[in-house]
Amino acid sequence: MSNKVAVVTGGTSGIGLATAKELVKNGCRVYEFSRRDEGACPDVVHIKADVTREDEVQAGVDEVMRREGRIDILVNNAGFGISGAIEFTPASEAKRQLDVNFFGMVNMDLAVLPVMRRQGGGRIVCMSSVAAPIPIPFQAYYSASKAAVRAYTLALANEVRPFGIECVVIMPGDIHTGFTAARVKSCEGDDVYGGRISRSVAVMEHDETTGISPEAAGAFVANRALQKNPPPVSVIGGKYALAVFLTRFLSNRFLNKAVGDIYAK
Image (cartoon, rainbow, N blue to C red; front, side):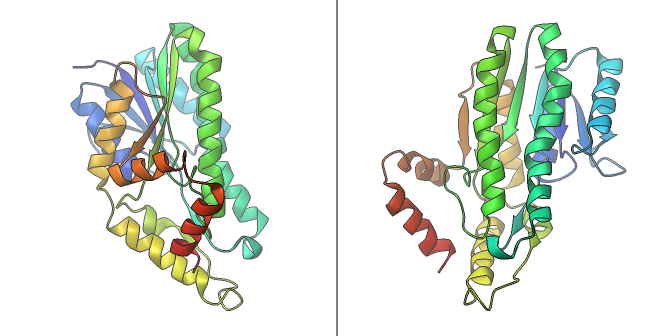
């Protein structure tokens, strides 16, 4: 059993909550950061903190350090999705997507990295998506945010390896969580695009609601957080792992047309 101290962002629902619970089962002392006033699990310490607010993030990390004196694991899970046509998505909404999914992770890392460096090690787990290597039409900004997470984390891993800090990327496929209902959906311009926006969103939502359970996903994430020498990039779900593997061999022309036939018809 582990006695590590873990911080999970977005830990009051979905994959984050399931990961926090699984880490507790494995003997970790777990803190979760979210914007909600209350936590969702009595065995996990809730700290109210918006990851887009640097001051709240730093205050949360300081509180964990005051109580525990160390942070061994950080799971960057907080995020949300928007959907709609690029042409009809205001830049402000796109920036908000990147602010939460990407810069929220950056804020957490900037607060935790000095802690891990001083203590001589730690592990940072960052949640990307299969949409990173396989961008989804009408979910372009979500795909872009998750591609940024993947590239950033792999670069960070090489920067901090000499300090004993490990960084890994996890790319879930479709997971059956509250993420689907929370997606900010816009069908503006659907008439111009011949109904393709609403049809695309319907396909996405069907795939998500019939997807992997959050408990299975959380167990996978917790395993990677605790595993000795985990792979730098992992995919949740066998068929999604196969799809990502095939991207190494398929031409971009073929791959993008195949994705378009599924999500942009």
